[in-house]
Length: 314
Ligand code: NAP
Ligand code: 8YV
Image 1 (cartoon, helix red, strand yellow):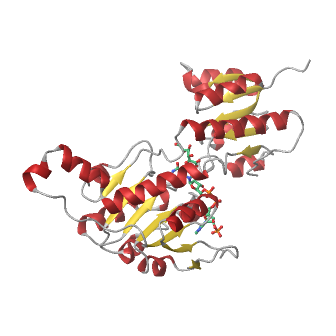
Image 2: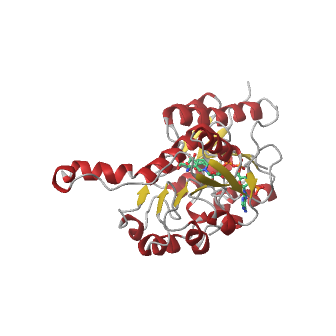
Image 3: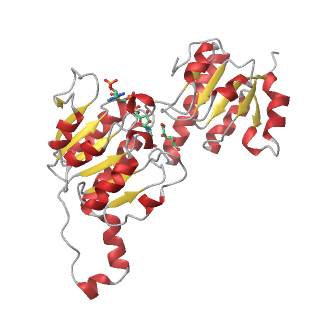
């Protein structure tokens, strides 16, 4: 019988799925170690696999000299140094597709929350203001709006399907036009924003998309426009967002992601009138997190059986 491989788990993910890795290997829980450096020095050389909740810098890759495979929990892998992994012949797998519906659902919740001011209206009701001050002010329409999707990939397509059910006029921005959709492709994001009521951002993070949505895009979306970000915090210029929301150049925004998670900048927390915040929960249902975890499990099983990886990144 061959020995089970040793797996270094850098950071934990959905426990009921993560613990299934124990069927396939011997796991070491780095995040629970009293002295992580000591644990790394002790077990690092024996491990051939790293599991992570999306964080794997070059320093960790180098600290595991016999590394062959990185399992990263999430579709976005901007927190994993894939270039370093590739240089060392280390394969990386992620968890695409199984979270598309879930993330698209939350994107729509943030569209609705922003346009119909669900959170603000909740506060108004609880504070007794309906009785004291009268009816809640009018909000903005959702059905039939013009929506621009920034990144019409796997998740963007599910968001578009939901927007279509809301009878919205759909257009999109990304580098390559799609030949399989009837919607208008805008190579110029500012130009698209000018024509939209709502912008939903769902591109990968990383250098190529850093501050893709800047002040000019926000101003083009305008004082009645609503910006939703379910992609990565780095994609939006947060300082510009604060300025545009405070001075009214942008109507409203709703964010699930931030540049330095889990910290949310004070300036964002202070904006309550036209900003809705969720703590990176777009894929965080039991159903989806289990499915994501099993994608990693299935990849590892395939790897150990000498079969092709199911969802390779490199
Ligand atoms: P995907 O299928 O690869 O789609 C990404 C889309 O973005 C593609 O259509 C791509 O088109 C476009 N894109 C890439 N780089 C671009 C650029 N520089 N400028 C403009 N458009 C660009 O990815 P996905 O599975 O839909 O996931 C997208 C991202 O969502 C993930 O990488 C992750 O960061 C984020 N996400 C967040 C959550 C959450 O919990 N909030 C959950 C899941 C995913 P072109 O290549 O033609 O430009
Ligand atoms: C993650 C995500 O689970 O898949 C991604 O790229 O962003 C989510 O699904 C998220 O990173 C949780 O913090």
